[in-house]
Amino acid sequence: MSSQYNNLMNKNEFQSKYGLNLKIERIRNKMTQEELAEKVDCSAVHIGYIERGLKCPTVYQFLKIAKVLNICLDDFFKDF
Image (cartoon, rainbow, N blue to C red; front, top):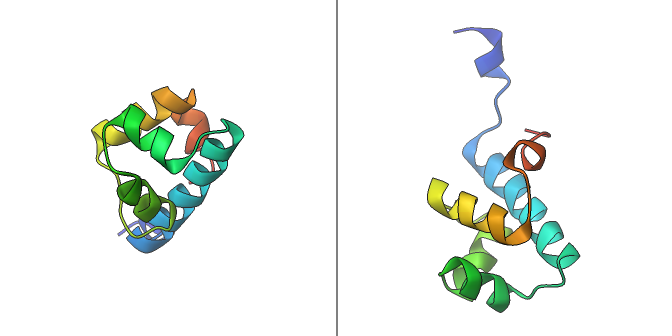
C-alpha cells in the first residue's frame, strides 16, 4: 500500500472535522440547526449528529448542504 493511503484520516476523524466545518459555516450563515435541516430536508437532530461527528451525510446531503450554505465543495474539503 502506498504511503498516501497510510496518511488518510480515519472515518471518525473525517466526521469530526466535517462536522466542525459544517457548524462553522452554518453559524456564518446565521442559521440554526432547525433552519438548515428544513432546507436540506432532514431533521435538526440529524444535523446535530453530523456537527458532533456522530453521523456522516450521504453524498446527496453533502451537495444539498453545500448549496444551502453557498459553499464550494472544493474549498470546503481543502483541509482534508
